[in-house]
Length: 402
Image 1 (cartoon, rainbow, N blue to C red):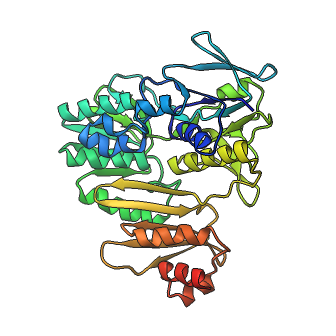
Image 2: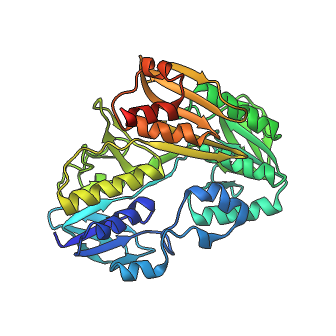
């Protein structure tokens, strides 16, 4: 293998290039991304960058890295077609890039729900650095904002906006916050946090339309705001793969090695739908998953590692003075145990039957790190947890000692 082309210059795509070099690949590497500038971190856009506005701190690597590592980085370049038979990637600027292996790291884009008026100039999303820079300008000039969507991004922005002195209303269609990713206990914790900060949170109220300066709820209530932030989730960028005849189902379908049906094409990160232990496919919108995917693919391409991808997924969100961390996947949980913790900390265990599948923590990094170690090993049973007094760091140490 002499030529690897990576489509998508987010954290996963950039990591794939870096890992290939770290693992000894000496062939050609081309990285293309459709945004200008250097590859950058997205998570701080709704957190630290929104507060500080220092874009220079977002770059994943300095410009010199790409030259030193002999990575042909092409910003502002959009991939338009894959010619699988010829092993070539076509770009909008007319280039045709030959590849021996193609890595799709195309990420995701903001979802656009069926709400009338989303094209209004007062409606903004938050996905790119350009989006974030525009939002910072609005924060400085506005007195109020309405956030449509009570997930991570919407709530992170709401916390920053309140700290900046804006009157903020969060409108969420579901009956609790972050409903797709956290337990009811954690939803309630963050509802209390945001309301204590002075944010108005309206649950079970889908947005029906946006009019200038107003969000009209499905029930008819009108919520005023100087601007509206749309934070209703994302959709995978899988069109390039689908047009090339690759299987797509809520993302680019890959096997346990992160390979598509074409052995010359892999996919990673937000755009990849991959199997987990029980055979189901999941798509994780997580920087850490994208980085872990990239490293796994690099090992396969350089060392012939054919092991199944099995990294423990984890996620985080900073909202106000609270750091939410989640280790594992709680989709199968049928029982939850809130562990008594010291003041200011929250730990919720998620179990499927008598097996630990995920742990949610707030301002409790030690239990979070212990969970990641535990979930990487043999299944953790309820009996083990009880014997350790639900002390996750203690249980992790006992397992190491054993």
